[in-house]
Length: 59
Image (cartoon, rainbow, N blue to C red; front, side):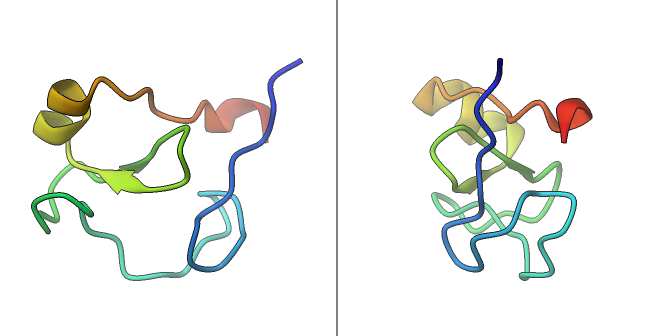
């Protein structure tokens, strides 16, 4: 069973998060997704930091 991940700012899952979304590394706003560490990343920084996107289908 997958563990649910929450935004570090509001403690809500990505589908319910209303925070302003930007990459915490580069501050980019394109392709932003919540990752397994509870932070938002753009595609380039996800790849560089080797973090996985949260699977929100199970939420």
